[in-house]
Image (cartoon, rainbow, N blue to C red; front, side):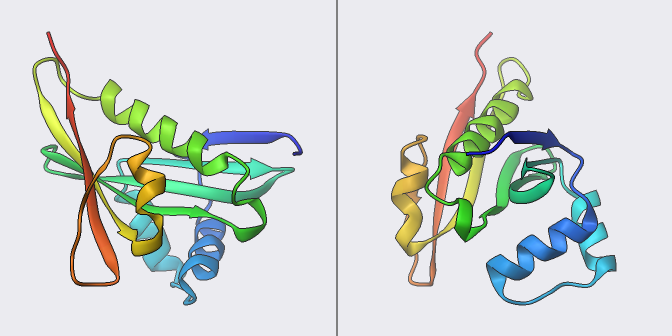
Length: 143
């Protein structure tokens, strides 16, 4: 694989729009994309030869829990370990930002066919009767 570069909190709005359009099938406006990115606690994206090929974002709920969203790897770059590297950094970020003696949930909604990917990182499924499965991990930082 060509040279891959991971960047944090530096995803251009135009690339966010392209990634989400490819992943979800519908474009969002520039204004909505800008607001979405600005309201994210943490964003990581991957570039290969200057092209954004993957991303993930963390949202925070009053600093009581984290929600992982927009976990996207473009089809051409799936099954090459990029999603794994992004997940490892997201989990590392979540752990690093816990206060000593505190705990938080890190949750996400997984497509029903992708639960096993997240379970490899320690997430536990909470099946729902919808298209997605609630899946989370409990984070705790000891003194």
